[in-house]
Length: 203
Image 1 (spheres, rainbow, N blue to C red):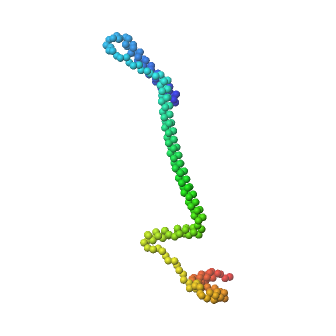
Image 2: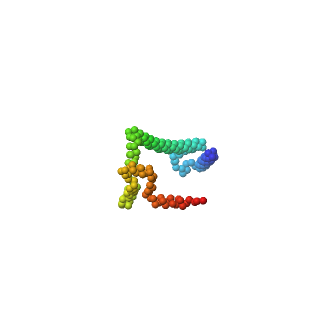
Image 3: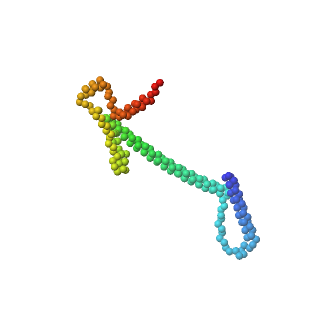
């Protein structure tokens, strides 16, 4: 492709030079035939215009193209170096962040180990349970409903569970009579037993 462009440029320059030479010869012939002093005013000599040969022009064009290409590559290299420097800075920042996190983790581990040396497991368990004593959910519900949500603990009162003063007599009764079987929900217990017995089938 470059060769074709080069040939076209050279042929155009050759045609331009031939045309210039023909015009010059015509002008000279016209001046020889007529009286050179007739109606001619003094004219300063023209500066000679230098026309470079096709080879020189092509060399100049190739030099310009090479210089443009060099400038483009320099710009690309500078841009890639700028991108690399930005990437390097980002990588360094990420590494520093990771190192800080690792240091913090190591400090926490060291602090927990020192605490474990100075305290017993029971003290640490109490401390952990003390942290969870505040019921955040209950507090937020009380704040939303504007009244206390706390429920008193269910209390079962069984008078037969009270240990009498005469413990030996009770133990003797248990040894002789066996378990009495008074339950808090005796009626339900008896109902479930009867249901179980009614499911039995005799053959």
